[in-house]
Image (cartoon, rainbow, N blue to C red; front, side, top):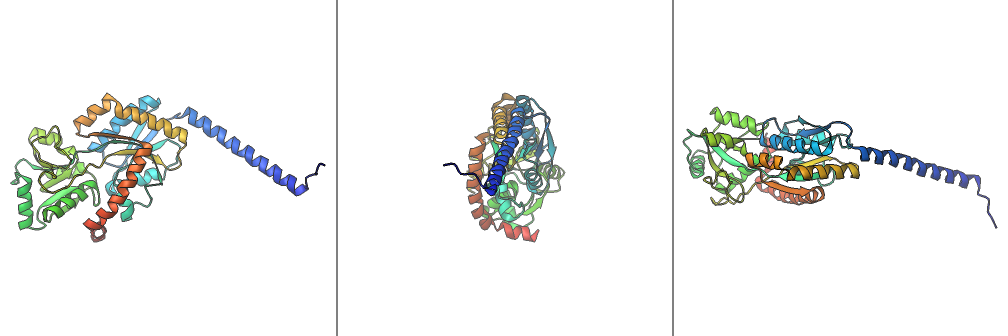
Amino acid sequence: MRHTPTPDLQRRRLLAGAACAGAAGLLAPLSARAANYPQRPITFICPWPVGGTADQSMRALCQVASGVLGQSIVVENRAGASGMIGTKTLSQAQPDGYTIGQIPISVARFSQLGLLQLDPRNELTYLARTSGQTFGIAVLAGSPFKTLQEVVAHAKAHPGQVTYGHAGIGGATHVGMEEFALAAGAQFNAIAYKGGSAALQDVLGGQIDLLADSSSWAPHVESGKLRLLATWGEARASRFKDAPTLKELGYGVVVEAPNGIGAPKGLDPAVERKLRDAFRAAVASDAFKQVADRIDAPVMYLDGPDYKAYVASVYQQETALIARLKLKEMLQKG
């Protein structure tokens, strides 16, 4: 026996059918767009000033990745707030694959300090971890400080008088120096800059005593303008084997702060795969390795999902670090 649908049931069926048809209509163009991606230039947000080591490495990667994707990748520098201005700009962009950028690992710290209003564990799309950085402490060649031990002794005798430049409160260079100061029992005068290149210029000009930065100091150490007192990795830097590490000097501090690449949350999975493939090829390229070697940036590749898991693990570590260094109190003091 057949039942004639009531008018209300017929209406619900029609609406359900229309909804399914509408969803299919939306999915088809989206898949077509992903298949043809990219059809125009891609903007890459670098959250650091032009000329720094992170900027150099990102430009090298983008050049190779653009060849893989068949479209140009235009680097746009959005420096400030220890890399968080660029990261925030990236997170607010349309998730269409046409705005990507560098995600500093310090997002795990700054999100907990309230300087970045997002949760990096689930509000960004991660494409690749690319390379680390070689951090170090350098002084002018004519500085009275010949060793790091001499710096520590002077800082203990004259608390707050030894100045150092870093790339922003709470960033890798600032936190690394504060960890070192805590381990050494010394007090320094920290001077914040928008990026390492600006701090470098003031060290070269004699305005501050120490530079704490990734390897922007390297060519100046090689030319004899600067003296490298220590590096911050697990082992000595291959090009600067005479400089000891903070760890071997007994301070127990290791800082690598690897760079990563990402996109806004909600990126189409097919577009995400294309970008992950392109940057995987870029990291493996000889062109990138040459730049990485030149700026002392060890390759530390992870695919997007693994990089996301790495960020989550660092997030937990940063919770303890923030408490130990009293970073929230530092920020409140300005």
